Amino acid sequence: RGQVSLQKAASSALLAWSLASPAALASYGGFSVEDLPPQSQKVLVSNAQRLVFAVDAYVFDLAEDLEDTTKWADVLGQLQSSSDARFVSVSRIERDVISPLRSLSQGLPEDAGGADIDEAVNGLVVSMAKLRMILSGNTITVFDAAGANGSAVSPAVKKEALDLWEDGRNSLNRGIDVVNALADGSEVKPIGKVPSIAETKGLKRNRERYMSYKRDA
Image (cartoon, rainbow, N blue to C red; front, side):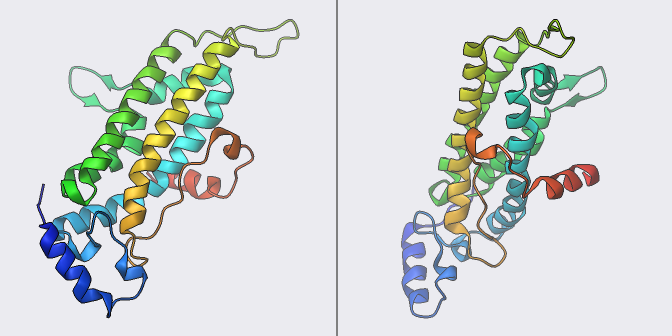
């Protein structure tokens, strides 16, 4: 990771204070976007955009289906990687949600948010691994007397799964907090954080955009 001295960052901030607009003064740990090495700036800009869709994926591909336990097999598929003799593919949750954070943790200097995002990545990975274990043993569905889909999943197990989703949400939002602190309003714009399970009910504002993104991906 590139290293930028705190002294240089502080000096740059003082020099810019009387000249910059409030948006340009956005910083994290004393670092503004302009203080970052050029490659770190590129990583920040590109992955901040990817995080917008990571939020949508976490809501529309996980939260909604976790609420309906008859769809847990589909959720499990998103959490599992696949491999054959020729190649190994990462899971969808790694590709769409974790990967942008991982790139940021590796591309930003540690004291400019890289270390904090790395902790967020680790927390998210652990939560998703635990969720995968729960779903692996609870994806068998049954039918009720009326022939409608029911589920053999107990309320306690469902709550545990949703709690792990919330843990992952908190980790993802910690990473977003770093990006938002650096957001200068130009190339790096603030990102809406992942809402809670309760707040996702009836959420429609990003669905059309996200489904369009998935079709084009």
